[in-house]
Length: 487
Image (cartoon, rainbow, N blue to C red; front, top):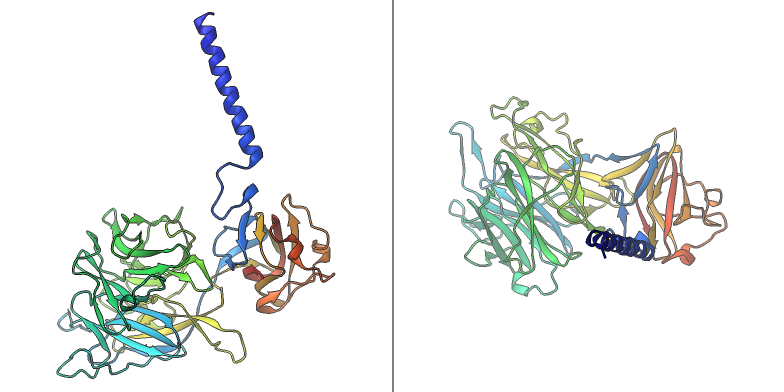
């Protein structure tokens, strides 16, 4: 046989084989599938809570938008007015621990006359309701000849000590509380049995080689079964940014990677405040302090103004970061001073500001930095209320990607005006209404609720559809939808 003809026949056979394999793979649904996908590419959400903080569930939107929400300012949670604290007290951590809410922060002060900072102390406060924190006299460390203070650590790492309670089932009792803190370009790990008496986990640092002069943090991520850490570095040696790593044992960490924000532009991110959302821990939320170094306001000689921004992730590496501010400085003049509006690390579920209303989320941010009586103010959001799927008075709709769920009811966290409404249609994977669950079968929903069970006219249950790929179609008018869940 002619050698050229032989080569041509070989190529044809190979191409035919590849085409056949591609057809078989497509028919069997063996192509690359997204995370949480099941056969056919549907997303298995089971009975977990899903928030509209990104477009993870979104197939298409018409007349609706994902709209960033904003916290409401409430009362002052704590004032840093003790002699061992001062006007540069910052880097606050809060977390719920049984019946109490714990708070840790750096106590320090700045003298504008000498332009010098006082010594730094790690301080502790607590409360039961998340509203007003008290400073217990612990008797652990000396300050000015007395141990009648709330200091829990002095020395290495006091600049940015960031503790957490370790939820790792294999954690030894003597290490139930852990922390990270830096000294120069070295990040150290700490341990405690009670959250008050601390020691180095080992003498050597666990991560080295980065400018850790910010609130770096780490925590046990139960959803992923590992420790995560987020720290500050300078990207391209110019822009403050955030790096991410993980560990199986809290001592040996993966090589840090820069967070990926998609098409969001570079901005100075001073802190990160990343945490699993307590109602949906598979979703990470972060509240970086965005720093604008070239702007001056508030009448202070040091340049720079800040606000709080919001971001979310499902893997710790890839993030949806909103350019719009989540927390603006507002009308208080001192919040326009350098390094204010730093959102503390941690979210707390608290009783509503309005008696009888559902619990809400409390978060905390700094004000009065560089000013006398630096303090931490509490702000609140409705539960799950970071971002809303919003439709105006003209109406709009959203259709989800194919989903697989478990349960018998669809539960919404939603809000409408008195004239607004939400209707829900359940479709098959191809987008056709399922009998009994079409738009004409859906009851018009209006009101404001964080746990509303969707009814259909025939009183039908969704249990027969559990485990099968379906789509949800939300038809809305002057309404917001924050989260969904099947139960």
